[in-house]
Every structure is written in structure tokens, then in C-alpha cells.
Length: 247
Image 1 (cartoon, rainbow, N blue to C red):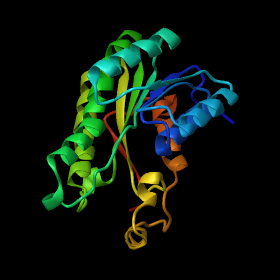
Image 2: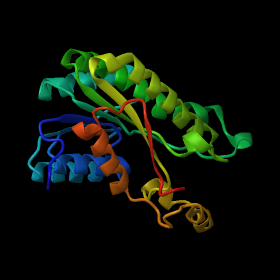
Image 3: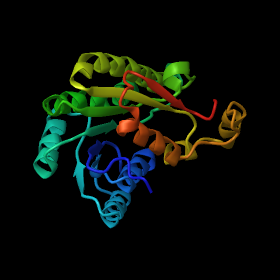
């Protein structure tokens, strides 16, 4: 296997399960040392750290609330004490609180915006000085196809993912002169715990819109993240890579 991330250190938020977990595993397979974060330690995250160790790379797990700037800054400080650098930041942490606008509460809105958007502000702000000093960095933010198309019943989630695109394009412009890149991955319908709970009729309706006539796998997104983290994409910034099977 051609290891594309050997020598790089990556920090991945919300990596305890689902897409984030698969990104961490795939990065480890490509030789990256990892800082893995989640709200709390779980059986899934413990299993992940064992797998990372078995792949022969260094790993550190940090549990904290990504929506809190002070906790984020403390975590980044701890990561730097352990590794001395952060080359890649993957802002993957995200939640949903789906319901129609007429039923959506202020709490539903605030929670989604705080985790999905404010966490990216927090981590980018905390890590930019490190990358500026290094004169190198790749920031990968997890968007969604609904941040481009919108989706009924997901006004808060769609708004948060649309905000991520604007944030990322602005970061790309601010930090590009220092060789720091910032791009977005916009997944379509991916098989995760989040989509598993959807009613079958909703899944069937989605399937009819996908050109490749299959749902995506977390590995599809992880492989895209490897590309954006590696030198293969070193002339790409401010871009939104849609990975949705032609949805």
C-alpha cells in the first residue's frame, strides 16, 4: 500500500464512530499519527485506539465538548505537547435534530449550529497559529449535500452545512498565502448510525435519486479525506468536493 500520509499528524473531531472513525482508521493505514476526539470515551473509541496502535502509528484520544472554545484550546495544547505539530485538521463532529420548522425549537437550532459550525470556528481558531508557524496545513471540513440543495425537515442541519461552505472558502482566502489549505467534503447518503434510523420509505426515496444506485460507505468519504490531506491535492483550496454517487 502506498502510504500517502506518512510523517503527518492529523486531528479528527467526532471520530468515535461513523465517518469520523473510518477517516481515522484510513489515515492510520496511510501512516498518519492521530489525535482522535469525541464528546466522551466509548467502547467504539476504545476499539478505534487499539486498531490505530496495531497499525503502528501514534494515537491520542481526547474527550471534550467541541462547541466550547476553552475546552478546544486546552485539547489543542495537549495535542501539541504530545506531538509537537498538527498538519491536518478534520472538522468532522456533527449532530442532527431533524424536524419540520413548525416543530423546531430554539434548542434544536442552537445545538446543531453550536456543534456543527461553532466547533469548526473553535478548532480553526485554535490551530491556525500552529499551521501559520509551520507554513503548512490542510483543513478539511465535513459538509453535506443538503448544505447545497437544502432538505425539508432539516432546516437547522442544512443551514449549518451551508455555513460551513462559506466559512471554509473564507478561511482558504485568509490563510492560503501561508500554504494552509481549507476544503469541504459534502457527502450524500452514507450508511452510518445517523442514517440507519431513517424509515425504509425515506431510504428508498433517496436511492432513486442516486445515479450509481447504491448508498455510500464511510470508506468513500475517508478516501476523499485522504486525498485532501495528502500532497496529491496541494493546489486545491476553497473547494467543495461532493461525494454523493451522483445524487
